Length: 201
Image 1 (spheres, rainbow, N blue to C red):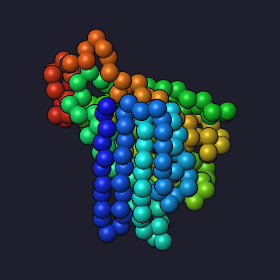
Image 2: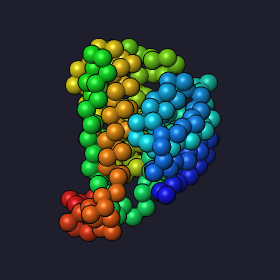
Image 3: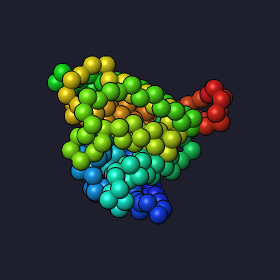
């Protein structure tokens, strides 16, 4: 079982996250930000990654530090749980519709973190969460997990649908990418025989 627990404590936040990459989508999430909890629950359910998160942050200021640090810790947990990366499919992509909205996510579990986030919002908040923080979460997660991540909303009107389809698309793409390919279960998915050295692999 590919599992990991990561804790991070700063003057701004205290975060702990446990994951099981080979789970069934069981979640137990408490970040203090209701909408972020909802999105992480979607991530768990649709990736089949079991996720437990506990976060305490300086929400009396705003949600920035908590949102970013939760992304960092979850990403680091993914990295630890993946271990040496042998046997993974490596690439994943998904198109997720939600009513009038369609969002595409493509990713590479490469050890080379990068984010392209082409998602726009017409509202400043969803629930108690600033919409500008979603990009911060996706960037923190991508860099924590060491993945190249492209998120693009192709069209949509409802802001809730736009971001929820983004998290669901991430979940499905991640589920595909971390799946072990039984034909190459003992090999790195790279012609170089190495991942994460900041060069083409």
